[in-house]
Length: 337
Image (cartoon, rainbow, N blue to C red; front, side, top):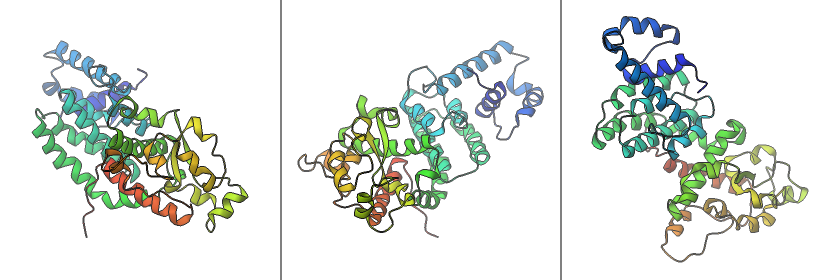
C-alpha cells in the first residue's frame, strides 16, 4: 500500500497495547522487551495473523472503507479532511475494528468531528496523536453502545469542550487563505451537505461528501476576487480581496452554472444562485417556497436571503455559518470562565 511499515507497526502497537508514547526507532526494542505481552515467540502464527488482519484493515481505512472492505462515507470524510498525509486517526479506527457496523460508524463520526476541531484550532499533531493512543485503550474494551457512549462522554466531548472557544474564534475569522484548498473544500462541503441532509434526508445524492467536495461543485466568491468596476461600486466600502476571501463570502455552486457568475455584481448573480440544487447556496438569494412546516423550511430557516451584498452581509452570513458549523461538528456549548 506504499505505506511506511514502521508507521503501521507503531499505530498497531498504540491500538493494541497500553502504550501512548513510542518513537519509530524504539519499536523493535519495545517488542523485544514486551514479548510476554505480544506473544510472538510463544504463539508466532497468532501474532503474525493479527498483524496481517490489522494491516488489511489499515489498507481498507486508507481507501475509505471499513475494516470489512465496504465503502464507508465517514471514513471517506476523514480522508477529505486529512488529505494524503494525515494518519493519526487510524490509531482509533484500528482500535475499534472489532466493533459492529453501527458502533464503528458512530466511532468514525466522533473521530471525524474531533479531528476537524483539532485541525481548525491548530492543535499540535503530536498532542492529539498521543490523545488518540491513550483513548485507544478505552476503545479496545468497548462491547456495547452504552460503553461507547461512556468513552465518548469521557474523552471526546471534554476535548471538544476545552477547544470550543478557539473553535468559535477560528471560524469567525476564517478566510480562504487560512487553510489548504482541499480543507476549505471539505469545510464548505460539510456545511452544504448538512443543510441538504436536513432538508432532503439521506439518499445517494446527499450521503456522500465527495459529491460536494469533488468536481460537481466549485468554490464561488460572491463578491469576486477580481471584481468588475460595477461589482465594486455596488458592494461599497471594504471592497477588496481580503473580504472576498472570508468564509461568509464563499459558497459552493454547481460547476454547470458557475461559469455564468464570473466577476459580476451580486444583483446579477442572485438569479444564478436561485438555480442551485444545494439549499445552502440557494438560500443566499431566496428562501425556497415549498409550503409550511416542511423539512426544507426548517433546514433553511436559520439563513437570511439577501437583497444586497456588502461587508455587513458577509459578516452576518459568517455568523450564520459558524452556528451551522457548531451543529455539523457537534460542538458543546462554550464553558463560561
